[in-house]
Length: 96
Image 1 (tube, rainbow, N blue to C red):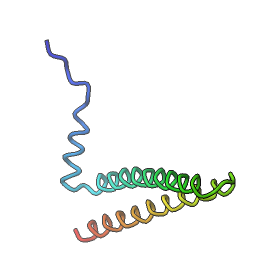
Image 2: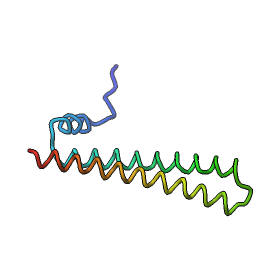
Image 3: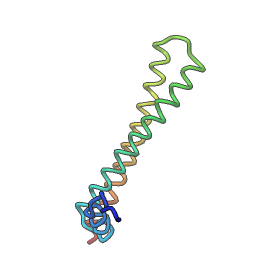
């Protein structure tokens, strides 16, 4: 007795076409990686800033400010990397 696969075959086909070079899929993949990267850097920045704030500061306002600064640095790093990735996609599309 075999059970049919619950996952549709469309994502595999899309992944295969993404490697072949459709520009729409490259842009979608770039967006996915950028959002994931920015959220990860936001979390790391907030945690790092929060840890430093807990160690160095007593007041709630100072701790919040340092954690917010860490979050801002994380978002800024994510934005910069996304901007760079989209420039690479744009250059690759222009070269074709």
